[in-house]
Length: 433
Length: 133
Image (cartoon, rainbow over all chains, first blue to last red; front, side):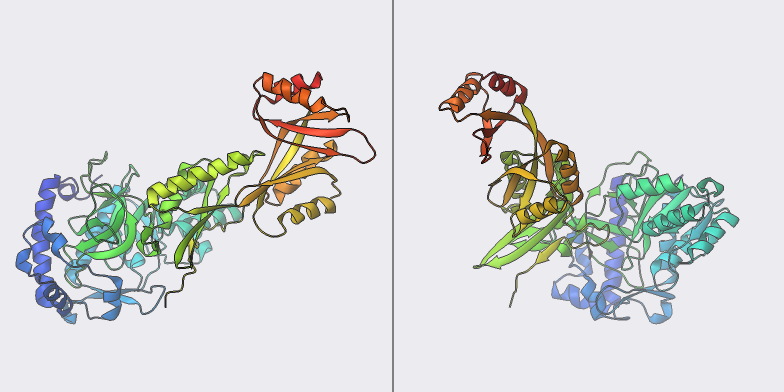
């Protein structure tokens, strides 16, 4: 099922025209009503009249997370506070939280975006959806909540925590879909096992998972354990919240509601647009968000965009998996190094485990670039030359891809820290004074 | 005769080999012979232990997260007779079998040297050729 066929299956050229019109409107609104954007555009010598189509978006300056912090709490609003009917905030791991505000229309648009996602997961008004995201300043709970109401399904506003009670509700209410973080879904599956609750005694069929990155392996595990289809829903507070994009039944990329949230991919260093399908930093412009418009907001998420029409019939652009964060980037001997590049190279080699640790230092004014890797146990041999060759092949592959020669250090099995979360993948020992 | 040899990957840091020797000692495994070779930044210890201890040694090292492998090598006993090594080498080179590495050890109460040969490939053929000597 498709919630908004007109938009979601719109021919691409028509979509670009629509996006261009919306961009003109929102840029004029931002310039005329937000001191922040007016100053910024003036500084870059940009006037709203310079924008006549979506292609002109590249003329606009970027917005970064710092801007939101510097203008805490309400400095980025582009409407009077009397028109703001809700705020949300994201704690952020460092420093002040960031605050976002929504007008009535903004909330409507956000709910529309979530409704599209839910429909593409196969949900409709007959479903009972248990929302186990946090309610409150976090966008997860209320964002999903309003989307579920929009499609006319039943909200079970469970909130977070109290897993036993969650399972009880799921069983008593015949919950058909669960919305939570993928790691909480794994935890629930474990608890079900512990309390001997047979999966098939539940009516669960769909999982709405987001708010943290997860792998295909995790998806398989969750699907197997909970006997559901597990879908990824993507979003970020700065752009609205969950529902900026979501997967369809093909589970092959996240469809972005690009009439509302226009995505670009740029090189994180030069900030130039990259070609279609190429990896870079994801940048969003909110085309229809009035309370706090975001113009070319740098997400720091590294990914790719795919503009081909999906098998599901939707023409909306699909975003790939998040491949890392551009702020993980290291500059070594003047070259940009992303830990995610090393990871994807290691995955090409059957001989290596996918774990690694990059260590960078500066010795005698030269950067050192060491990568610790593990050879898989079955590839150990008595032939030292064979190990040397395995090492040399990796060295030259990394040199070709990244552009500088690494010092590969093979360490014993199980030496490198395994962690599914934000494991430390690079250590920079250099001191810049 | 083909015998089984254990190889252990050694990171280039202090006390690596000592760690292995201690582990085997604590588990009553007698290191009959070993050799260590190194590349730029890592080494490889090749170890011979008593037949009955081979699997135990391998599993023990593996359980302690060592990079370990097991393979066949050609074992040759050579009396202290001049020229006996040459014969063996000639046989192999005539058959076009390259030698990856070799090492030898002797026991003090015996006049026999024990020679270990690792053919680059075709270990069985190498063994057949040499055992006829």
